[in-house]
Length: 358
Ligand code: NCD
Image (tube, rainbow, N blue to C red; front, side, top):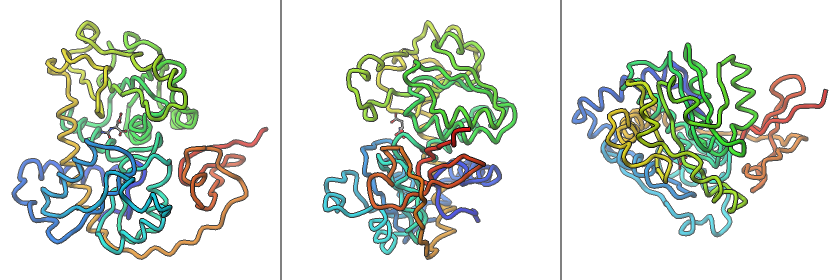
């Protein structure tokens, strides 16, 4: 049984639990008929406050293939959100109806709040520019399936490293495997957030920051392309200027190793030219399919954990989180800037970190 009740960030699962999920996903992939009624009678509530096609369809396909059912919304305009209901109340209410909740939200930390109030497991299907742990499971399962390993990998992350939540979760998850290194390819405006640079330093994970694909493509095992996250830009002119900063084409692919792979969480906009799709090293569509199997495994394992009454009452901290996109600055959630080291405070919901001046 999993130790966690909900999957909110990648570290909620241990490395051993992830291995168990891989084994289960492999079996589901190879013998799907054995699982077609595994979730009969179970209900999944999908609360998508932010647009999603892939992730939502992936979860819905996963639950349907397990014989379970799905209720929910994909357009917050049609839910009580427009009446002003809080995430905490929606989570409490849905946990009286369904057996598992999948939530996507543009506010960072919203699924964390839901998990604190929900009696049933909550899966974070993406919270703002913060985390996307099931995409990370998809990515790890792709490494496992293609390479047969999740260690000894040089991963080049390219594009919007500032707002790209898939990148944030992947870095955290990979920190637990041996001999992993990163190339961070981005324009300076879209650099990785400082808390993750600190994370890489603290965990002694080798990385280099470069601004051209050509500076990293020859040595990488994985080139992980990302979309520039239009919806998170306050300044639309800046988005227009940066949106096509990287385009992977067949010319650049000539510089890469024969056994490297190209991944992308999708949707692709312009960052991978369609000619690359015909290169056997392009794995992004297969990656999306693997995502469905690993989500099936995750749903099964979290349903085993099942119903657990939550009785929390958080006391607000004196310090305030200064992330304007954090749920605690959107709704009446108590501030939770917790001390994580001497003079270092971190928001429980969104990871915003503040250090005392020395
Ligand atoms: C990603 C996401 O939503 O963060 N997509 C996905 O989950 N399939 C990447 C993106 O939207 O660019």
